[in-house]
Image 1 (spheres, rainbow, N blue to C red):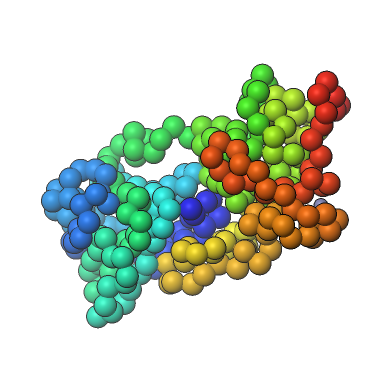
Image 2: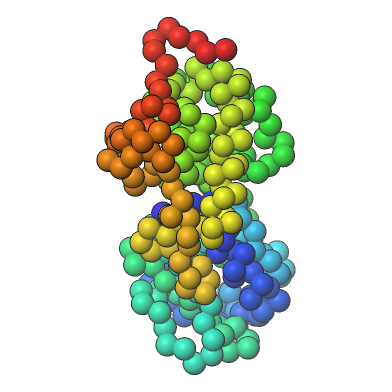
Length: 279
Ligand SMILES: [Zn+2]
């Protein structure tokens, strides 16, 4: 599933091409891809709007249209947004077409059909309640640590909770915990202030590196021009179960946590023993 860096890279490649463009109509090939309003009304109501900008909130893309309308997109597992020149045939798994006045088309393609588009005047109601953005300057070490207080859930599970922090998924939660040297099963509330500070810095470093590498493509992710990311070449633990740690050569291990695969280095990320309270 695309996470924060992939959604950001998609916006970085799409926004310069579509900001200022006017949508003249839409074709909905898969009705369930439209969350709001219904498929018929969507095509009718999206016509005539100009794209003013695209912002990211967590893993959502928020197209700001004129007259206070928003087109909110969540890619889920396999959603893609592609910009095609006039006359190009539709991409594979095409679900929704947004036709632009200059002849180009924004295609929403989605193999698994879990992605959703919503045309709304109230984006806050569509975007599920999200926690702070990782790069929000208001999210400092103290507030990040305070948000973990009393939480007994494993830190890995908490990092996946979009209401705790927005935008992290399985890849970047695992990579951030490796970077910070924290075992994924560590109860969140047991982290020291220093560990929380290290984790926040690690999350930011891991996400920044992934954005610089134009996202991670394991299978499906591509940017607005169909290009794959390169960050998969730089992952330290995710998907590297059974391979040697790049730092210490210990074999990367794998466990299942809340139904999700979790990879970590048992040497670089030791689990503090019961009763041990690191300062
Ligand atoms: Zn290691």
